[in-house]
Length: 305
Image 1 (cartoon, rainbow, N blue to C red):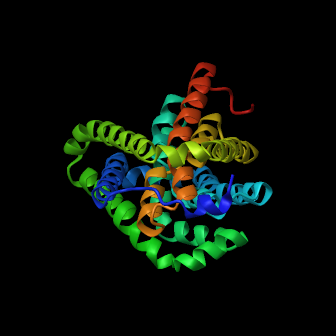
Image 2 (image 1 turned 45 degrees about the vertical axis):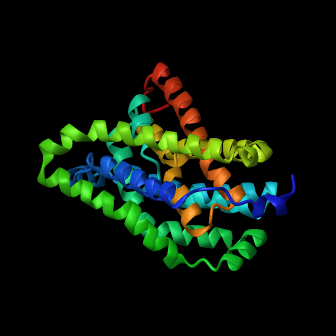
Image 3 (image 1 turned 60 degrees about the vertical axis):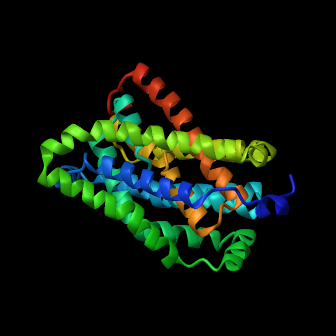
């Protein structure tokens, strides 16, 4: 693979398509927040160990794992940026569904998703710029693009934080309405996001086919490490099996839709970066569904295991 050529590829998206993606992600986050109540946070805070370990896995463990893989594999700058961007994003809302499917702690999962989304206004730009600055090819590309943390902060505010706060507000003020609309809204928004990612891949099919092998393996490795290490760290911390499963999914399932927004809004659809983010959006659902199915069939084991 010609790394320089890959870094120069620009994927094609119209302004209307980008606007649609922004709206889809905002609706998804609004729908997720309809499950968030202040009382849920209070309940989790009474036993804060799971929350603390989960946030550490999300914002410290996964970015460091992604960076270590980059140092070992030495991918092109745009692929490295895509991987680091994903690792810096908050958890994806698919983690909540997968946790429930796997008989994990759904309350912990929802609380982690909500808190990581709110924390991402600081942690996403800080993590992304920090780790990218420790890989020379990625750092050089960032300098060429003149990207600053404040650019990402504004996007986080508009697409993640505001919809999340609005969803929590609707739940607090109109609980009956929230209960009625949350499932249809969540399903429709996930369908639209899936269709968008498929359309993105088909619209740039030649570029994707030329480099899919690299994207597949690096995404599969980092995703597997995130799921496995998230579980292992919670086991070392002495958390219950249900908590381990919740944190595992929160670590391995990332908000790839938000990653695409940053990629196209601030990096003009940089080839390797966009391919990594888009493929993660497909792969983490495949790996997550497979793991959730395995755990569901296995059932919950005693805490002492």
